Length: 289
Image: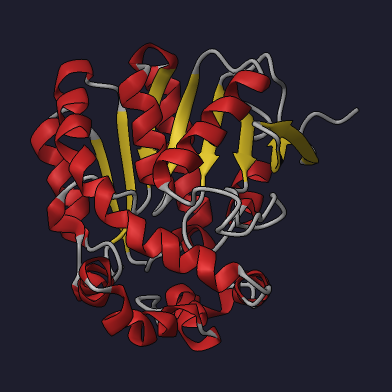
């Protein structure tokens, strides 16, 4: 069997089917890749192919996303605490004792919960628009935080974040004109198809509301950074209007030895700068692992 090829698997953990992609030799250093909104492990497809010769890569779909289970909001607690519990259960199910974490968007509060609870397991952090500081929030979040305080009054505006127009915008905003043709159109088509499933809107609205509690964890995450000093690589789209570049620069406070690369990209930098990010990861992990 070609261990470089990506395998598509499903594991049942905590009574839920969790879809995940796996590539590379399990005897190699492991990277767990955690996706954001509104996408899935699909966002890592090219990176996994690129790195599979040297690393073991595992990328799950969060519950309610991609090919993983999508129980109704009445049947599952859609919170970032719960998504973390499922991810931790999958990691244990797969027997992953030590791993680097690649965090993007929603993947950050999930991954940083895991890292700060069990720092001895985490060999490195790689953040691509994976926010951990208040400075990272842009005006994109104004209506979401208003929704957190008053759901009925703001739900109509927040629902605009579930539309095809906004999904495509997340991929194309901040991308230089000469790189727009690198974005595969199936990215936003697949994401939107998942968002349009009956009942998924309620799931996403619940997670939008729950996001406010991630901020309560920031002091603990930052204490973990300062205390444990895990090797850090930041590869962030400097034109990201969802998690702004100030969120990337804030990591400097707690990681004076961190490695920082601000790319001429938007929120989904892997689509347009995947080769650069792959090169940075290889160089970084070769030094720290």
